[in-house]
Image 1 (cartoon, rainbow, N blue to C red):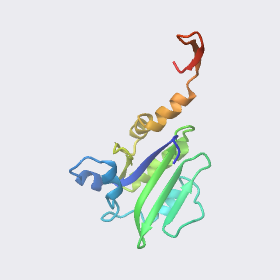
Image 2: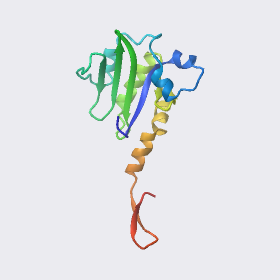
Image 3: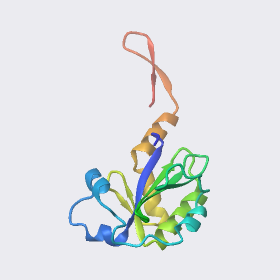
Image 4: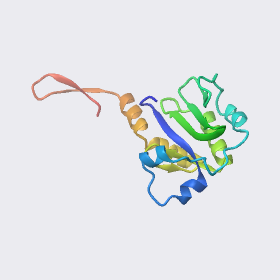
Length: 162
């Protein structure tokens, strides 16, 4: 993952609703989200509508990605989907990718959960809010901000990102 990507897990809505504790990084990595929920049986076809499928590198990992850095990884265990992870590159947001992703998440009766535990419903406003409030968004925004030069106290000049 790059610093310009926001990472989400696709998590069953019922699993999030059943949680009694906050979603922490430890909870996100330790929970078998799809153990008691059914991932859509036709997920391969549906995800192919989001992004092109990649050739499998590992037997238990399937990926769909675009050339601009967006990707979806689905990990399986014992023939069942164990995890679905999405990475969205915020340098060049792709509305087609975003709309197709939200459609998939909605049909899967799931939500998007950012790595820091923030939950986003599969709506444009919630998804865009989760992207805009991410560390990656701040990183890209700061990196693309114009730099100005100002005089330092000793008379030299130093770049500033005001």
